[in-house]
Amino acid sequence: MTTNVYDQLAALNITLPAVAIPAAAYLPFVQSGNLVFLSGHLPKKDDQVIVGQLGKNVTTEEGKAAARLIAIDLMGTLQAAVGDLNRVKRIVKVMSLVNSTADFTEQHLVTNGCSELLGEVFGDAGKHARSAFGVAQIPLGACVEIELIAEVE
Image 1 (cartoon, rainbow, N blue to C red):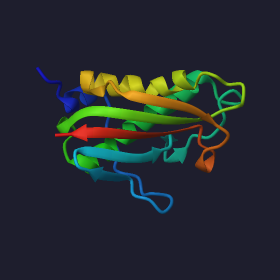
Image 2 (image 1 turned 45 degrees about the vertical axis):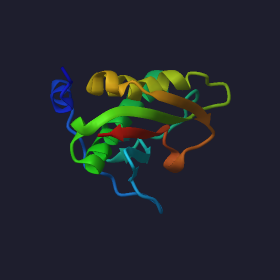
Image 3 (image 1 turned 45 degrees about the horizontal axis):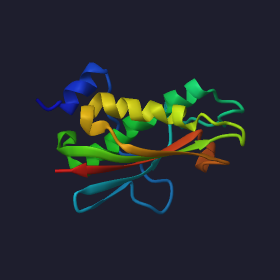
Image 4 (image 1 turned 30 degrees about the vertical axis):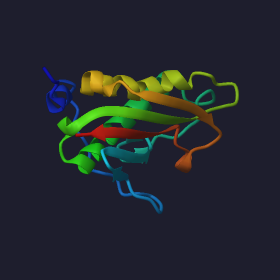
């Protein structure tokens, strides 16, 4: 039996947000064929970007929590793109940029905050390929930025 995405979200007490208005000259998502490409999303709490640098003033656990918040925003944008998240055949790829010091090496653990939630919500369809990079800075000083590619039916 296929997992109903909305039942999973309700069980996790997650309400999806509306699509954020882009902060620059880009679209929040673009669909090409059966693939939907979501632009990078920043972590927000109370409508404020979560800022900081991993290895300096943000812990791995705080970064992981920020990545989880991004996953919720990504799902909100994906819903706006496709109308019904149950149309998602697979989360294909996640790319994560982690604002981190040169000696911080736990970008993969930070990104797990996003990847684990996608797996909880979408089941096997949430298992994806992924990259996690450490970068010197992210727009607005955010601690993490994540983009996503999904395949839809």
